[in-house]
Image (cartoon, rainbow, N blue to C red; front, side, top):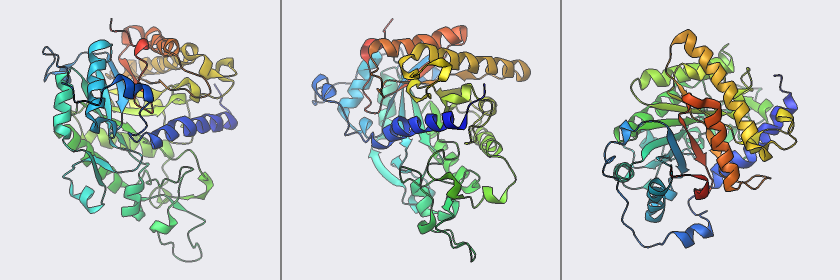
Length: 400
């Protein structure tokens, strides 16, 4: 299927509005009024499932997860909410930020680079204890890391960042400094994806997270920027290379697997990567990820697809059809890959539990889940739900 540049622009614009915007403003204070009514502020005993206590890493698939910011899990009330979901719904996993859009490490990291870069902002004081509580409630616990969108690292090590042509004095030898950093539309600085020092830094954080007890590491923003003045970008490292964008990203995928050979790893990709066979201008080709991850997690949020996708004026109004087509395409490509390479990799997409232009009811969230099950059938490995306020539509999540 040939996708026009305008269609891709619309998709990225939608991603900016709901994806990036939601990421940026999910600061733990954005808890809905209904949540405050439902969950008492009193400290409550965390539910424990004895049969799964301390055995979460051995949990059988499918994994059905919800996302929580580091701010949310710093509150006893939200931990109670998550563990209650595990008892009353089909949810059996949680994804927690350990490094988010800000670039800050959100727990008490002992890594020397984190100290050197002033990149620690402790929001979860006892992360190991939190993981043990969640395991005790039968939850599989996934650490989420934002990788190349990293303003903290860019400020600490400007040479690693993407820079602005306009800000650089191109008549002299360019000096890569804090002042010349390129910013996206949200005002965030990015790291040059070809900067090997940044690779080492992120791998070190992932290793530390595994040592603290996380069952899996989920990597996000492993890509080139998609919004802002893309013609204004200067790459200190990739600019010296002849590698294509997707080869830079694929090489980083390979590096992560080599550094974390035994760990469970997942990667987030644009939803359109399930359909498109080019790199979408950001370096993401789904087959590249098949080689190195246990789970591929395309963000198949229907509200992020451009008008005209599958003939729908507003794809967000058709969650079942949009996700079914996307996941059937992804599975077809995965099956071809597995036949050729005998790899064990599974699809586990992100689904939306938020409203953008279209109100997402419990029925619509159910339709998303049904589409994943119907498209993958025996290969169904679960899903992950994204809500910017970290509150989920319980009526959509059957306990059966």
